[in-house]
Length: 139
Image 1 (cartoon, helix red, strand yellow):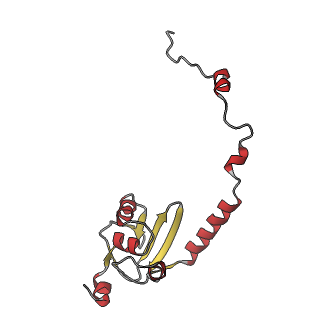
Image 2 (cartoon, rainbow, N blue to C red):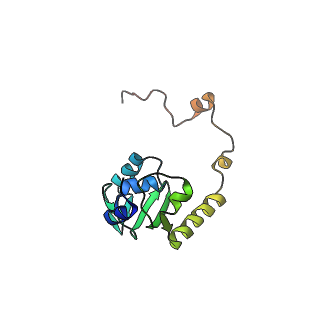
Image 3 (tube, rainbow, N blue to C red):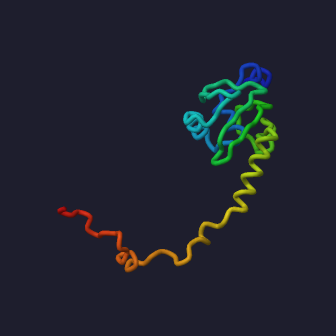
């Protein structure tokens, strides 16, 4: 097993770090997100095998949330959440953007409230004038 000093000098694979920092549930999901181009390191697109160093700035999407973090520690094992949170520092802009997005989701109207009558019944669907049950015509 390598010493922490050796790990900081060599770096750590990007997909492994994202998994160890608990941004993604599995390492394969992290590698898939990297492959889709949703992760950049220091402003440049990255590959899963990219070696991370202390101080690198990562920008990635986690679901619909865009995050920007600075690498403060390296770990090749996935530990508890407090230990994982010590591996990075989220930027102030990223925190503010997340809070704005959460507030927008909280204030957004409930989609189900726009439904006034519910789903049409089978009989209602048959009554629709623009729907032709038999689409094949000899015209």
